[in-house]
Length: 420
Ligand code: LLP
Image: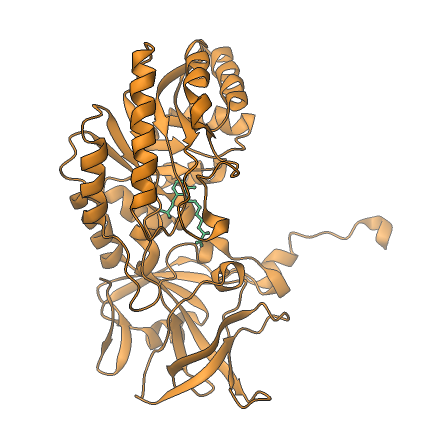
């Protein structure tokens, strides 16, 4: 469910016609719906209501915009961060340090220090080497870092290979069969307070079974750790729930996910932690774009050339991902077209041979379900600058990220004197 709907023949974000945003802010522009964000946060929380002890940390990587984080903070979410930059954003959005989890295989010493300074709730350690380093950094400061050990359960999440994280060959976590030994050794270090285990097997998951398999393995590990005298008070189950990008595809609902978690993990006597990203923000955003021109191709299927490109929305070029494409003022006429951006490579293709609302040059359209892994994965390729972001709230909207013009990027570059 989202709040992007046709009202009086025009696609609106809540009660704001998208043509108004295009006229005032220009295109391309990401548009987020506050009501949709809030709805998803509440549906997710509701799905977990049977669990007595839980903590939800929004995976900031999905959408790090400060206004989006503020909505999450107001809904009581903490944050899952993977860099010092994301940690700073979580704090800037008002999330308490205690509610922040720091994941990632490549934490730098200065990021560890930043996390300790902020008093974050949990470091998710991804290797024994990292744990030893963090222990030394914390001990040198007279601190103990609260930690969970991320394990790699070696399950096939059955998702795109580039966003699968829980198979043995992936770089994440420690092999589950070596986890108990590593946990015990790390728990013996004075700088660490080992309090739990973590798992995250991948993103855009369409099936609950791989998650269930991973959780069963995690439950066995918790029992093994406790039997060995270790303390386990937290279990972080990661994120990964997929969302529908293409009409007709079926994904597990948060309620089905919550029921499975309660069934498998409900008796663990731990605080269960969650790191949802896409399921919260995915369909709370669209990328609003304008058709620059429609060009005939050699086989007569037209190319609709839009002003958004692969630098603004990378997912189609990067993962072959599908994003629905809809006219802002559909006429009822349809056409089959290739949808492409202006960037000078063939990869800058959003769709081939797609049946879409008929468009002519100048018409507005949206790519749907662009709220997750959209603006945040933008680049300035072809010197195109960074796209603006807007949030709608009822009948009002605000720019929540300025468009960054190519000149601003060029102004950070220097030609050394020896090239004069
Ligand atoms: N926790 C960890 C440790 C993660 O690595 C991720 C995502 C999440 C939570 C959130 O997963 P979600 O609930 O959003 O599925 N750029 C790709 C997605 C990469 C996901 C990376 N990790 C895409 O556009 O599909």
